[in-house]
Length: 290
Image (cartoon, rainbow, N blue to C red; front, side, top):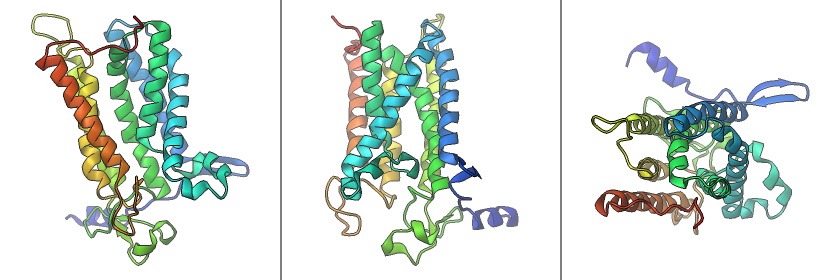
């Protein structure tokens, strides 16, 4: 490895969670990254919505509800599975700025909000989901860097050249003597970025000799479910802070919730593609009440 790159990896560590601290004014990297993801998502999804013949202002109408539901869902999901941390002082469950959110909870909360929105506006759930998911996975790629600045969501100890230094205060007790860990945030960020590119390319592909989309409505959503879940399945196996359905990582009997949910999502995505292309039938649309 060139000396310059070797030196860079040798000091691969977080500068800390705070970007600006001036008296009562505190700006955290995590919050800035979330804001950036939301703004980029609004811009991209608006352009994709227009490409599908939807009202350009539709995404701006949905966005506040979607963000609120996703954040609440992500926090509630995490707190429910980590209640032992909060049962003594449950008010700490409200301190979301200290970390502790789960993307699967955000997906559940956001999907429920979008379902209600679609039924209210009588829109196709799958069309709107296809429009939103490229922005969602890009937001996931950006948001994972919040884990870097917070020195959280890292993996097992490693000596690989791209190893991440973690301060002692953030290390699990069983690895307190270890300094370098897998940067699982980076693995997932790069995976999500690649999936974003794939979804955008597929979204914009047209049928030969036509201006109609190449993929059927709902296919983008199914590909996202499969693609994201496959990445999460293997990355989650490296992490040292998994949510466990039962057991614990210390006792090596942790049944990792994220892996179970990812497996379920991948199977649902595969079933959706089989429904669309194997049976040649449209996906049932929950957004339009009968």
